[in-house]
Length: 138
Image 1 (cartoon, rainbow, N blue to C red):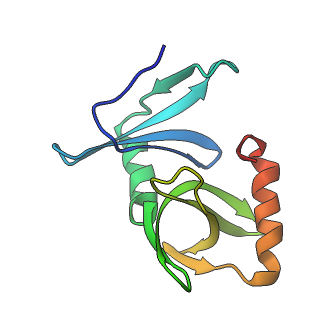
Image 2 (image 1 turned 30 degrees about the vertical axis):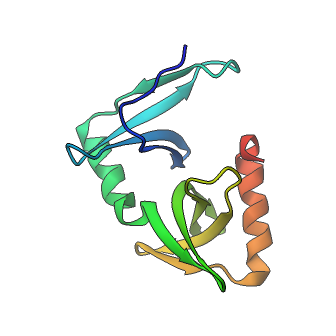
């Protein structure tokens, strides 16, 4: 079974080790958050609404971080938060490029709601930690 939503704005992301689905309904300027439970390896998913308090808490934590414009030396990349995870006492955000077939992935430390560049010598260990924690994204 394939289900499609009446919005082109559907984002799956992981936060606090929980997979979420964010739906954005432009006409109503409304956001809905669901917890995603993978039932089996056939791709079956169960969406559960976690309740208004949980939804508000997660959106309050991530709303300003979710969509970012990442500036590189030669272009601006429209990116979406794909995951958060902890690495050596830091909260890390994994971002992927929006609306492309083979997105660029970038990592940043998140401190007080702000993205901080990861020092070059720490970047590879952070990326490896992500792959170890989420091997399904390798």
